Image 1 (spheres, rainbow, N blue to C red):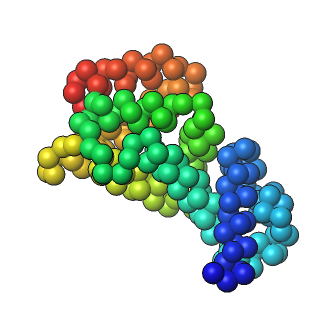
Image 2 (image 1 turned 45 degrees about the vertical axis):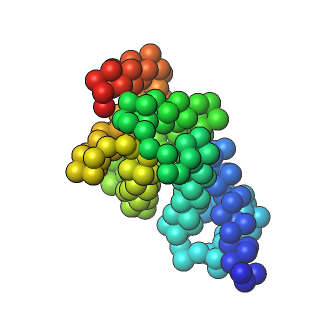
Image 3 (image 1 turned 45 degrees about the horizontal axis):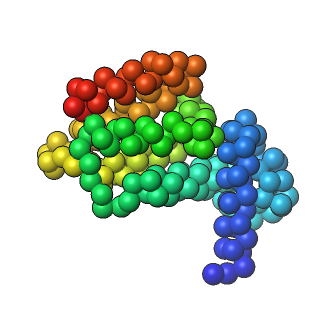
Amino acid sequence: MTVRTERREAAIERMADHVLAHGLAGASLRPLAAAAGASDRMLLYYFADKDDVLSATLGRVAARLTAMLDAALAPGLRLPGGPLLQAVWSEMSSPSLAPYMRVWLEVVAGAAHGQQPHRTIAAGILGGFADWIGEHLDAPEPERAGQGALLLATVDGALLLDAAGRRDLAEAAIAASVSARL
C-alpha cells in the first residue's frame, strides 16, 4: 500500500468517525478535512471532489455497520423471514447503532430531495443491505428478492417511526410483520 493510499484510508476512518458523531450537517469539506487532520486542499489531493469524499466516508460507515451485523449474524447463517427480521431489528434499533441510523436517515432525506451524491450513495447502500439480507434469508430463490425487499422496507419504516419518537409503533410494526410470517 502506498503512502498516499494509507493516508487516504486513515482520512476516511477519521471522517467516518466525524460523520457518526456530528451527522451530515458537519460534512462540508472544511470540517471533514479538519477531522481527517488535513487541509481542505490536501483532502482534495486524496479524493477527486467533495462528492468522492462523501461517498468514501459514507461507504466506510456502511462497511462498519455491515461488519457489526456480520458479528451478530454470521455469514452463511440463514433464517426464515420472521426470525431474521427480529435479529436485524434487534441490532439496528440498539443504542450502539443509533449514530449509524441517524446518518442513514440524513442520507435518505437528501436522496428524497434528489440531492447528489446522496441519491447514488443511498441506492448503493440499499443494494448492499439487500444483498446482505438475501445471504441470510432462508427462502426459496424465486421469493428471496421480494421477501428481502419487504424485510428491508419493514426495518427502514420501523427505524423512521423510532426516529420520530414512536418506538411503540416501530415495535408494533415489527411484531405484526413477524406474526404475519414475513
